[in-house]
Image (cartoon, rainbow, N blue to C red):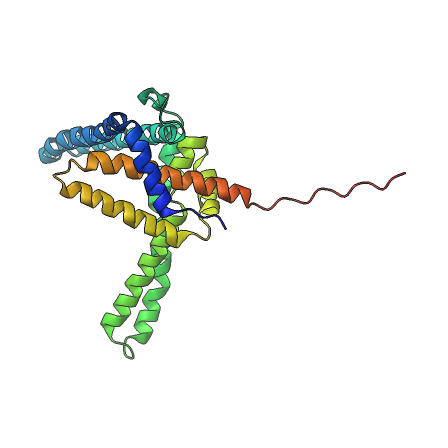
Amino acid sequence: MATFSIGESIRFGWETFKMRPWFLVGLALLTFAVSLVSSLVSEPVERSGVVSLIVLVSLASAALGIAVQLAVYKIAIRAHDSIETAEYADALPLKPFWKFVGATVLQGVLPMLAALAAALPLIPIGYMLENAVPRPLIVAVGVAVIVIAAAYVALRIIFMPILVADRSLGPISALKESMRITRGVLGKILLFFVVAGLLNVAGALLLFVGLLVTVPLTLIATVHVYRTLEHTASELAPVSEAPAAAPAA
């Protein structure tokens, strides 16, 4: 079973950050700037009430956000592998953009489909048990099942975008590969993202200045988790048996 160390991944992110802090702070500033510009443009358009303009700006904002995310992943992967030589230009060309769009959409849709699939059989079961089990308990169990189903799928496909940015895989290939490398380590992956989330919350509490450190740190740590799982899962992959040697004449 492939595995990784949460502590080692966070330390790797911190040590990498210390080697070129301003380069990685610039990467975080890029993402914040794009988000700010997108918000400043979208707000007056939404207030205008012009539906066609709202749709156009929303699509443009989504495309810009996906392009920036692809660029950030490509730079972060390069920084993880060789922080000394990483440059912002490593994001160019922004390929494979459409594969990345497909993977991003699929990553967002699949957990919702999993939640829906879990919810559908719960409805008749809830009606059957309505007179025997308290309604709040039925609702609580139903919500728990739905959340677990969505979280399970989300964690299994968590590395889809990184796989596309790193290896130019198509969305389906990235999905299969993410499921392969996350097999058996979902609990640890969940704990890693909880730790990363807490670090970013701590960064936000420091007047948001701390996010300039914690965002690139946790990004590099996430790439490290991906790299470690990718490597160990490949090492543990079953090797097909070699064909038997032909008998000597």
